[in-house]
Length: 278
Image 1 (cartoon, rainbow, N blue to C red):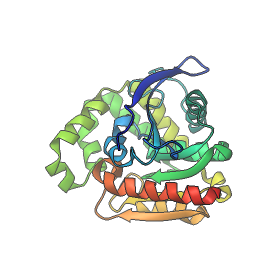
Image 2: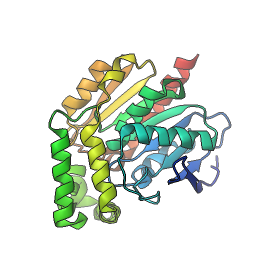
Image 3: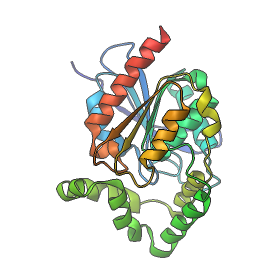
């Protein structure tokens, strides 16, 4: 069964910023709709191998958040609310009234914000390596991370990031992936990176969680130091219709390290969403 070639395009938001996105249509009409939102300082390429597993099962929209990838790099006050509004405008543009929203790390915060503000447009949530709240000292810690980038440059943070993102085994056996992710990371605009760090330092979506009624899948790496398993458990305990999967020995970027597992979890989530509608 052949798939329709993906459509790469850009869209101008109401405030004049542009988002770059890729839209893939499944070969079967009426397929479920899935949005994929990437992590801090990376881009939609995070989802490449996950999409390979799912492209015949769903219509897939992957995009670069503002300040990232090929989207506009205008630094300003970045918030989860703003990023959720960006996604709502993008969905309007592509003609999707609703979709399952899956996000990794920062993308998971965006997914939570979108689900909280647009529950009628959210058929399901995939919360991968993420949290609703980074804790009482988060603003200070993320400010320190931005200060470190200013002092050392983005290149100076690469060793720390790679250790945080991937298990030792994956780092040893996939040097080409590390090189590709590092090149995306170092290409970031510093001011946009700092604004995105501030977004994560200030994010707090906990108030929305008990009201979620859509199916939710929570996935985390067993060795995730950035958003540890305990944060995933807190999400699971707070969200009524949620499942929790812990991937053994994995760290923070499971869509890259374990795309087959993430694709399987998202496929099951889409199935739950279809049952939820009936």
